[in-house]
Length: 155
Image (cartoon, rainbow, N blue to C red):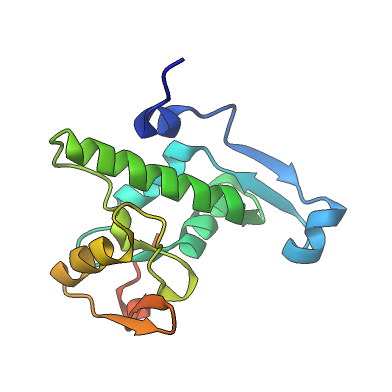
């Protein structure tokens, strides 16, 4: 069986999105209420809307998803995984010559940290971000966009 491409993984919604009650085990970490487990394409759609010069963090994406679905929170785990799938699908499209790809390098981790798991790692994203006039600085082992909060897009 051939391996699924990143684009196929992005389009496979597996019955998502769905909103579930936060169970006892999860409530220690997330509080009470409901959690939305988004579909991969929903995460990708939000990432696609971030214009040049602007940024978003996984947390902002989670808040937007929760609002959209009337949930208390957006699932941190699946939102992060689907952002990674979207990044790899975008890179796959770029390698096929597509010009209009999801600008995944504009989606940062909490605290403005560059995601080292995205295609090309920190170095490739640093180049793309610097091309858009962002200043990337190193803090310990992490690379952070300096003053990233000023560039956050309102979702």
